[in-house]
Structure formats: structure tokens, C-alpha cells
Length: 234
Image (cartoon, rainbow, N blue to C red; front, side, top):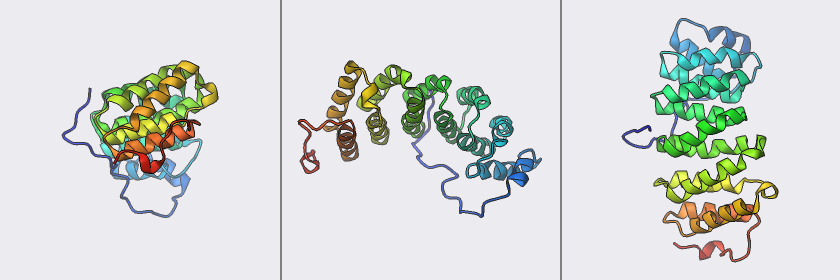
């Protein structure tokens, strides 16, 4: 669906220096500033601040002409979720050309904890660029915590991605997500599918995936036949 020349795991927001916590009232007003730099700064402030008034005011910025404003608004909506933002986030993911912004959108959809988001997050897991697929695997965890009924829909997709994705970091995040599943709410057939996928992960060509698969199995209470960490393939 989406393609970039090379994976880029970072976000433009990652390396920005820490600043003193801004005034929420000033930042709310600045969200509608004429200057895109000021709008971006205000939206970025709500990546740290939580204010129940911010969510609906951030939604229009998802369609801002400046990608840094859209990026900041997406992250800020993950920090300040509102049900009104779920459909605009979904719509923007489908039309967004910037991979950084799509990554922020998927993060926000996960932390919306809204069941409507799961289809889009699964689409991102299966068809977006590597950096977005990685975040999609993680974003499924809060959705499942809020809606355990989604487990039968989500688990097969995570297992498939663990077994088939060409990028080790994506596979590792799938193992982490599978390790967070509530064992008591897993039907037996799905539990066995998860254990089989994670046991296969112990033989993955990447050491990080092998280690993460081992940890996920342990989190799920699987100890029988589990090798010691120093017995994993080098």
C-alpha cells in the first residue's frame, strides 16, 4: 500500500530538546494561529499536556497543510484522546502521504482504545512501511486491553506478521504484543496458535526476535520445553 525508499524508525519529534511545560490556555489559543510554526508548537505542547479541551481542537490540524503540524496533532491526540477524533484519524491515515504522520496516527488510534480503530491498525500492520508496521503491532495492545472481544480478529494477524514480515524490528514488536495477551481470555485454539508462532520465533534469524519470543512465551506462562536463554541459537 505504502512505500518509502528506506525504513526510518525515528520521528522528527524524537530529537527535539525538552522545554518547560507551557501554559495550557496559551497553547489552546495558539492552535489556531496563522503561523504554522506556532500551530505546530501548540500541538506539540499537547503531546505532553493533557487537557480535556484539547482533543476536539486538535482534530482540524490533522488536515493542516504543514506535515509537522499534522504530525504533532496526531501525537497530541494520542495523549488527549477523544471519541470525536477516531474517524478523522482513520480518514487521514487513508489519505496521508507522509510516513511520519501515519506513524503518529496509528499510535493515536491505539491509545484511543476505540474498537472502531482496529481495522485500520490491522491494515497498517499488514500494508504500511516498516516504521508504521512496527508501531501498529504495539498499538494493538491498548485496543485489546480495552476490548478483549477483538482477540480472535487480532491474534491471527499478529502471528502471521511475526512469521512473515521481512523486518526484524516489526517481528519483535509482534512478539511483544503477543506476550501481553490475557491468557485467561484466549480460546484454546488461539492460545495454541500463539504458542506455536512464538516457538517458531525462537528459531528466527534475528537474535532480538529470538530473545523477545522467549520472553513472550514466559509472559504467557509457557515453561515446558522452553530453552534457557543461553541455549537459544546464536
